Image 1: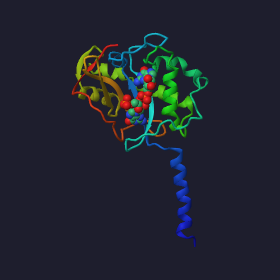
Image 2: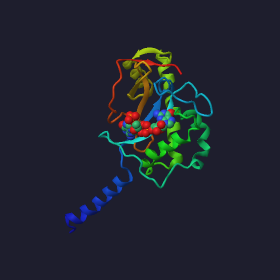
Image 3: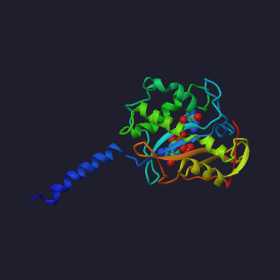
Length: 224
Ligand code: 5GP
Ligand code: 5GP
């Protein structure tokens, strides 16, 4: 007969192997409203390719734990390599534009997101799949359309936070987290939308935990 220890040991090794290949529980998929990045005190710079489309842009796909903590900068041996995403460059320019100053082509932003967040999901994605997965998620979501169908327009008007959350939940099927920032006068405005994706990056899920932060109950949706 095998002793309990001889059975337990292989199980422990197996658990250790599983947890070392995937040190996170789910992803936040984060989109930013460009109008809210730009009308702050710090302002913004359009990318070298010109003013982005009037649409949400991708910020990143961030591995996260169910307790709210998250891994970052997991593999310095895998710096961003533009040659790996050559086939995605035109989509990255249109769907993942940078608004940081000084004006640049976006490579710095993509490199930052891959190195800080993407390298922590290497058990699931290589660099190409990381960016492709985020681009596909954005296409699947069409957030601006969801809001506009509910009469919520980027017109500088004020909308109830609840109406924004409801419009997204109704169209996407999952409750979003809304992050606000402040415009030049300090008004609370719709800055980022977070949705959650399962740890394999294949489907949207209910968020296991929401980030902390606060918006007003009425928030502005600035034009861009
Ligand atoms: P901030 O401090 O501006 O909210 O966030 C700065 C950066 O920290 C974000 O752009 C992102 O890279 C990371 N970050 C902030 N909050 C979270 C979070 O809840 N989960 C993950 N995975 N990253 C976060
Ligand atoms: P995170 O907040 O994900 O850690 O990192 C954001 C980093 O990317 C910052 O260093 C920021 O300067 C840079 N960055 C470049 N373009 C953008 C942009 O369009 N939006 C945001 N939020 N950060 C950008």
